[in-house]
Length: 519
Image (cartoon, rainbow, N blue to C red; front, side, top):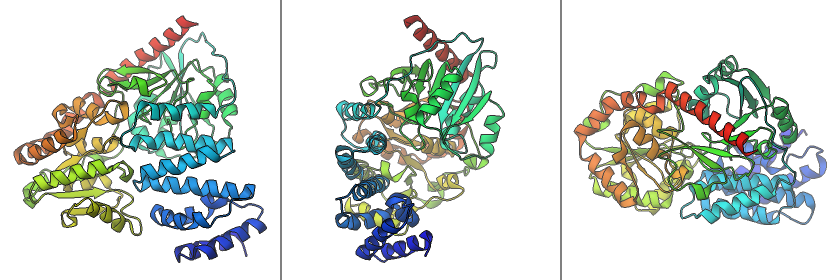
């Protein structure tokens, strides 16, 4: 029997909740198959369902042996996988707890680094964090790099060579925020290089490649090999667009292959690396971010990002808000489910209680999973939210059109939305956003200020409720915003490409000169 058929047998037993039988089959496979892919790559990715995966792993973990090196590796992989499931399901504290178990016990440096990196990502969604919580993770992350970075080199080029490092050079939200930066730097002053850590390509990739000076694929290279490649290209400024997100190559940044290294746009927090010199923020996002970062902060005026529309569907807004037709206000949130904290649910409950007959529309990929609606509904019910006033939707192909069924968008906290806030505004839906003291908690504040809706950004849960209730009572204003928000957004700094590029070019020149003066 082939490997695929054997895996199919195990998956079948897992789905039937015959966990002990599944484990016996699994370990029998490990004994007889040369290429045993471990749990993460084999069984549970076959399920394609974080909820089912989470429930299955919870049952399997206590049964797993941990005596041999192979057993320990399997167990660590299972812990990693269940922690990722926890984060997707909004169980952020449980996710971080499981990851700490791996961090504290693993002897494998790659596992140690990967788990800490994911912790650096998901901690942004955790409530009640401190500077020390972030800096402790960053210190551990840095400790995983045992090599000495390359000596910093300075070059005398006719043009400044700017490299972009990312796994998202395709139709991905990060490109919506960065493609203009990559392709529209002044050709008389800059040369542009891209280093892709992902095999994914599409029409966006092809268009991007046609507008830059050099394209290199590094997904099959080690960190050191990729770093040497970049150093050989004599890059003056290397811009990491991934941070601690998928397909990141922060290990490359740890070698310091470029004269100046910057991070931002694709991730809203620090890399934690001392070899990354700067992080891109703006006058609204910066707040009291400095203690949370190992990088120096470049604060752009207005916005640190500039948005590009990839599809006409992003602007196919209805002519009127749904409240005029329905006779009641519909609040909504399309942010990732892991960003929905208990405190936000308590706050939404207060808003629904204060606005008679109002509804709540939630949309995320968890809801579309088998058992997903029941999972989310159970949590909402636990917080006293009347399920008769809630509609749950999974993601759809023409996703932005669902904003036409929403009157007011409710942002998450502390991990605020960026693309979802933008989508809502472009579809004529105002957004209520709560902000804190660090960059990742202030993205809504920045976007709203840039489109002229600063009054919808608040600094407390009480104010969040007040603004939502006040706006819900003014249907005339909701209708005016429905009509005008798209134009307000398009005429704002968020789509003023020329000014954005000019300012960031100046920032690049200044930071490069600053480092030259320090040598």
